[in-house]
Every structure is written in C-alpha cells, then in structure tokens.
Figure 1: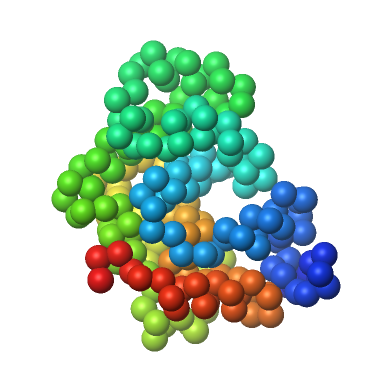
Figure 2: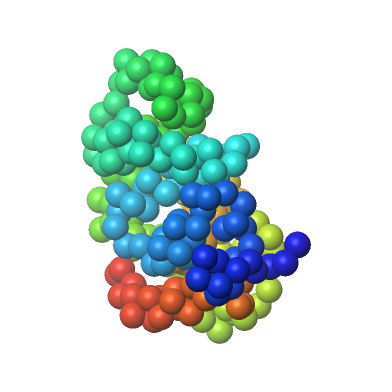
Length: 203
C-alpha cells in the first residue's frame, strides 16, 4: 500500500486518511497540529483510551456524543462524577459503553486536577515529553517511542489508567508532540510550520 494517496485537490496525503470519509478533514485540520488547551488534551487522552481494542473511526464517529456525555471533557466536572454517573453513561448508546474505560476517565480527571495543582497545567506537563529536535529524523517504530514509553510510565505512576505506551503514542501524534505525517504529505509542512510558531507551555 502506498504511503500517500491523492486528496480531493490532487495533492498527496497520508495513506490512512483515505480509509474512511470522515478521516480527511481530521487529517487535514487536526492530526499533528500542536495543542496546548488542557481540556482538548484531556479529551484526546480519554478518547485514545476508549479506542483501545477498537478503531479510531468508531471513536471519531462518536466524538460529539462523547463530548456531550463528558461535559466537553471538563476534567473538573468529570472529577465529581459518582457511581450514578457511571450507570448513566453505561446506558448511553452514543458512546462506547465500557465500565472500565468510563471509570478510567473519571479517575484520570481526578489525577489531572492533582497534576494541574502541581505542574500548573496538563499542557506544561505533557509537552516536556516532546521529542528532542536533534532526534526528529530518527526512525520510529509503528506504535511507540521512547517518549511515549516515558510519558506512559510517568502517568501510570501518578495513578492514571488506560494510558499504555501505544495509547500515549497515538495521543502524542494527534496533538503535535511529534509530526508523523509521511514525508510527501502536503499537510506535513503545514504541521511543521505550526510547530515552529507554537509557544511551548512552561517555556
């Protein structure tokens, strides 16, 4: 399979974005662009956790339902969820009804509150794990990196759940901690420019 496909404008894009109609807009406008908003970062980590064992297409199709169910991924609100909320969410056909994953989001919201008190923001914490510029040309494995292993280990040590290294690597790809658009993808240079102008949190 080719690493690129021709988009609607005839220009090359990462091959995976041709796998489903909804992937193109996500690929062109979101995937890989740097994010520093704590709610968006928490959302992405949560959705990657929900994706575990499933396809991203399933999660992306349900994303608005997830946002409604979890109050826009406002972790301060989610941290107050009770067992009654868990039971409510388990009946919500618009999301992935998996008790362990739902409970993990609530747990992780509480851990995020602790992290923000300690570090200032979730963004300041996760952006410390950006790959060193000198190493950007080094080849990656398909689903993990040294940085995703380190971030996963650190989050688990703080009590987070459903944050394995593969889940964390997908998160890092999505929020711009690394630019994994393939070499000839037309969006790769756009992401690189955005990363170049991005003010790293905590700098």
